[in-house]
Image (cartoon, rainbow, N blue to C red):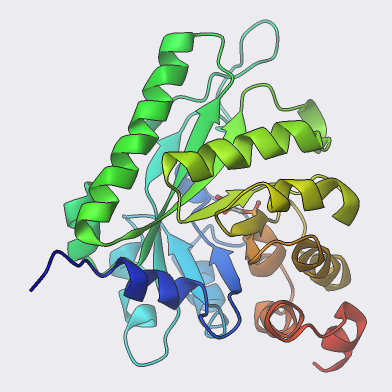
Length: 281
Ligand SMILES: O=C(CO)COP(=O)(O)O
């Protein structure tokens, strides 16, 4: 046996090799924000997971894994993505500094050996850059580089989501330059996939995708009430060169998550226009 690991096999479970695209559902919000609306109780978790069969992958936390393990068991099931870290930024009880900036302090929740043994296909980790404290920033870069190394050894794929304490309040779009910097740093550290927030338009996002050699999955942000805008965001993402989407609230807070997911698949994998993808269901 040569020194092969299962990285190619595991990555191929997330990013469909037939289309090079992926629709991943994030269901790990509790570790950052406390009980998330839509996934707050065990009953809600069970109900939502009952509607996620069509996802290419679903992201959970280490603690959720025993609750939802059966969801991932069997032929053709969604890939298992693990949210590898806790972060303070975004925590409701967190008080940012006087200038409104949060520092983005992170903690890794499991070793990559544990992750591989648990059957995980890919881990997702944040990469916080732009801290006031440059020692923190350096630790963040080193933490992500170590995760990439450790994951390579055990054949687990790595999704890096770059974020910054400098992000504008209230969800204002980041500039193309900042997003390009974020994504390229993530790819150069060694991410297999980069997850990143959308910056408003196909024109503004295209240069980001063009200059990031790792496939990009676009994050969803708040929403869920309006499936049409969710499908439109997925269509714009792939039009701009992204490899797909990694949406949480837009799926699990939707009235009918399975229908939104079917629409996202049609748009992302089959290039169906969003209006038709919605009408089909
Ligand atoms: O992956 C995510 C959070 O880690 C994305 O979640 P949202 O789509 O709800 O922003």
